[in-house]
Picture (cartoon, rainbow, N blue to C red):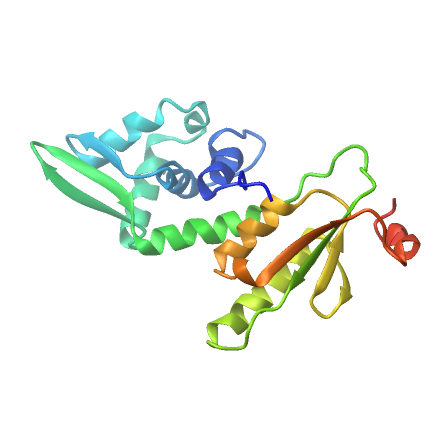
Length: 203
């Protein structure tokens, strides 16, 4: 399997930092910016944060007032924290709650890019997630709902098929719920009833 699955940072960069076609609030933009890691700034936190975002052209679509409101909103919701480092320096970073929120956004944004031409191979996702601890039930349901959203076809209870490369995306989803050791992705050249499945995917 490949190890270059899209990271939270990469997804947010693609969707919010470098994509002018996708509408996003200043709040999500700041979350995306800080998803890369803590930011060390000199002087007051907000001016330093605004100055740092100027390097990204996409930030120009937001006004100073929008950034100020977004900053206040993130602090009020405890999604970011300001840590004094000394010598008039501060570190701005996501809290654990903020990191969770970023993962939730990234999870919703995840899509599989379809190639112009099918390579004739099937990707089969098999998972066997245990019932205990109880949190696995939530993980199983979330994984099932997401692969439905991504367009997978259910062959059997925990066996799903898709015609395009999707290893990176599925690993991202599995790791979001810490169930990667309970899944397997198989690439097959032929399926017994593939003519039916081809019609489902309009191949």
